[in-house]
Length: 459
Image (cartoon, rainbow, N blue to C red):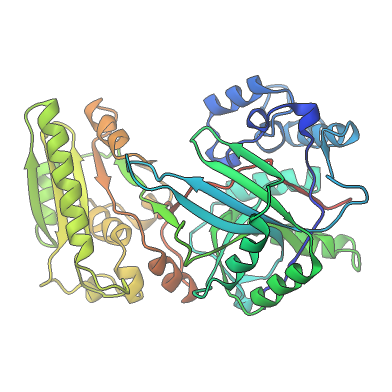
């Protein structure tokens, strides 16, 4: 069963730091070097100093990015920069709404994603309570573990999904969000983040009861979740009997049936592949895919061709079964090659034995565009083995369609492969089957804002 608890969060005191826009940040793994410097410029108390500090040439075991983060945290707590809103501190859940317009949908409707922040009990995956959906990398886990050891605080929330078709939990939260919020801030992408403190014991207990039978899927924060599990094991080994705080991590819980669930595609750029030849690739691909070509001869025509490609990808995607679990179907992806003035749409041929080509995969896994791209287009047509793809030897990733086009147009990439977004039902089916999607398969939007609340293990 899922165990969730209220907690007394530390938060920025706006009387001391000014506008929250100057101190909150995107999650650590979304902070580029340029963003980091901009965050540092905004305020000496910017949250990036804790979650994405500078690595300096003279760093030592006693003076490094992790020990400096811990020192900043102690200093800010000591000076009341980060503090509890009330004295004595009151445990609460924190209703969290994000109001946003999805990227690349100009003129589209505004969506609201509702959830709540609380403590979630850490559960090893084999207990069948919390499920990962993507692969993780050792380097990121080691980095977050060092930070957690140094600060002894959960600085960022892990994003988890639960299923609640009747939206009972959202209805409980709606009762709280009818009043003025305690925190509201707009981030650099125009997303409005709003918090309400949920302190009423009756509501807290109702939320806990409604969550008790839920199975949870990690949407974002796989590395932080695994880090928290590893840290809990360390606590149990070094402080037996005093590890209660380490058994929980700060989590944001969102209903996967919510209207505000948006998953963006992550497109693949290919570079540095020896012997690359687009004509050779297309000839090999004809064995597995029907290929439609959308040529262009000018910038204006290129925009029109790109629109036709996207329309074709959407049309093929729309022919799939609603459950998205068929082993065959209209799985399709787009492509643009260096030196070739055309876009291509590659759609699975129905006469190919896909189950034989993709053995040991569930039907939901075989329904993924990214699986077909990696295993068939990259593996069989280009000769890239699974390890090369996993290690991202020739791959990089972009979110925006135009960014992928630009990478090829500038000559920085040999090709860009364009994907449609994964559907939440595919994520659910694969995760609950105990499987994981390939890396960079999902990009849940918007990200949870870092710095709104934090959970210190030592109060």
